[in-house]
Image 1 (cartoon, rainbow, N blue to C red):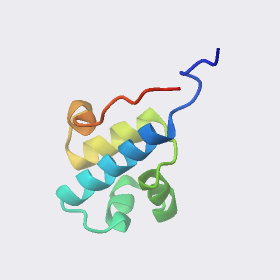
Image 2 (cartoon, rainbow, N blue to C red):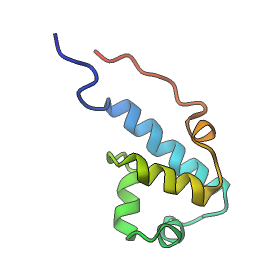
Image 3 (tube, rainbow, N blue to C red):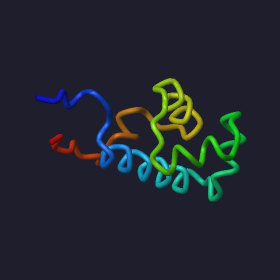
Amino acid sequence: MKDSTEKPNLEELEAIALRLKELRKTKGFSNYEHIAFALGMSRSAYWRLETGANFELKTLIKICRVLDVSLEEFFHGIKKTDSK
C-alpha cells in the first residue's frame, strides 16, 4: 500500500495556488509582480507558487504576513481531497 503522505496531491496544490491568487487580488495586489517585490522574491519564483508549485511553509507564512491574513484564513474553504 502506498503512503498517501508521501507527496502532496495535485488537486491540493492547485487549490492552494488558487487561494493564493484569490487572496493576492482581494488584498489589492492586482499584479503578481507587486507581491513578488513585497516578498523580496523574483517574479518567476512567485509565479510558480500561483501555478501550483510546491513551496516551503516559511514561504507561506511570509506570504500570509504580507497579505495580512492568518493561516486559518488562508486555508478557509480549501477542502481536503481523497488520496487514492
